[in-house]
Length: 156
Image: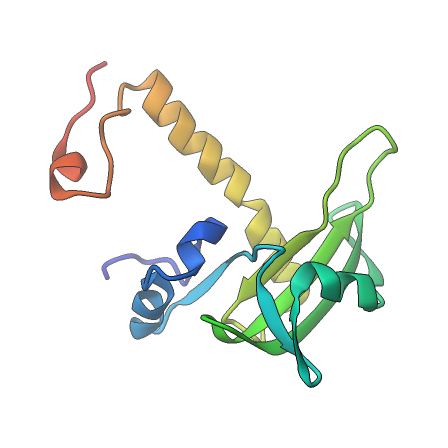
């Protein structure tokens, strides 16, 4: 693939039905990203939505980089992902702050949960980089979806 990174981070829409994960794994690379709350996981003897699963499980409180999180994690068979490490995490925030529960998945099932959470935390920096590049550096027409878009140059 020519990409030196060991782990690919992605949006949740890329994880399902795109073939991206299989492509990443064909290069012996890891992937990690958000898992949609309405997606299923095999838990016990049933297929259950991960948001419904979050209501049934007990979390463990952990401190990571001066923040407190309530975490649950388990290796589970996940439809369309195969065996994956599923992480359900909620960060403690002030009453006025919104903090929906995050559902994360990775094929790196032996990764420490802290690593999965930190990796996901990098997503925002990546998103703002691309937004700034498109708005501030004239790269709005450069898209990797087609060969023409990938070869366009921005105008400054």
